Every structure is written in structure tokens, then in C-alpha cells.
Length: 116
Figure 1 (cartoon, rainbow, N blue to C red):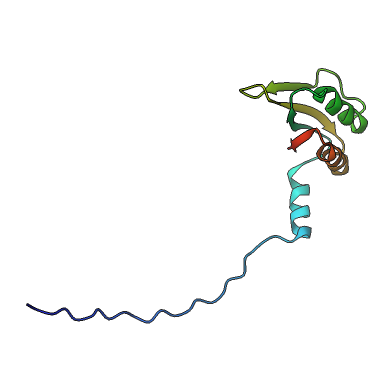
Figure 2 (figure 1 turned 90 degrees about the vertical axis):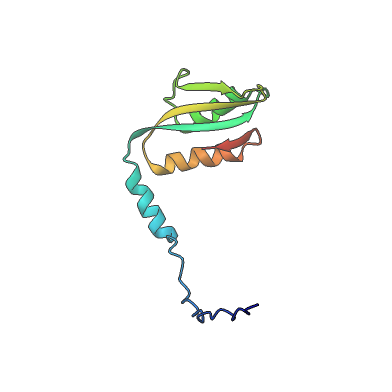
């Protein structure tokens, strides 16, 4: 019976550490400014539990930031089992600060699960 010789392996050289190329906040802000040209129509999606007067509460918040918002400028959709509702509110944003402020207020509402 022949014996096998152990296989010779090449020594593995350690790789140089690569720095992750993550954009800085400044670069990310500059890039996001390029993506939107203001003024523009912008859809905001808000998700919450059904009930608790969710639709009217979210429209009240949106109208605080976009007073010209009309009652028919949103659509709603129930989840499959009707436990959750999503609203898509289309606003006419004049600048980035206006969008940031409405997102901040929507996100801070206890009724909101998610704002996109």
C-alpha cells in the first residue's frame, strides 16, 4: 500500500487592510442635493396602524408644512389583513428644508410606524 505524501501549501500572505469608502456627511449631502431639483412634486409614504384617526392626523401634519395641499392629493392602502394603512401624500416641495421638516414631524408622531 502506497503512502501519500502531505500536500505542500503555499504560504498565504496577509492582505493589506483596505479602508471602506464610505461617503462623508458632507459628500452625501452634496450628492442628495443633486438628486432633487426644487420645486418638485414629491411622494411621501407614511405607514401606521388602522384606526386612531390616522389619515386625518397625517394630513394635518402635512398641511402644516404644505398649506396648499388639497384633500385629494393622497392615496391610502390597507395591508392584506387590514391591520395597517399606508398613505402616499404627494406634496409640492419648494426646498429640501421643507421636506426634512415634514419628515421629522411625521417620524416623531407615535401613530407613525414608518415614513418614507
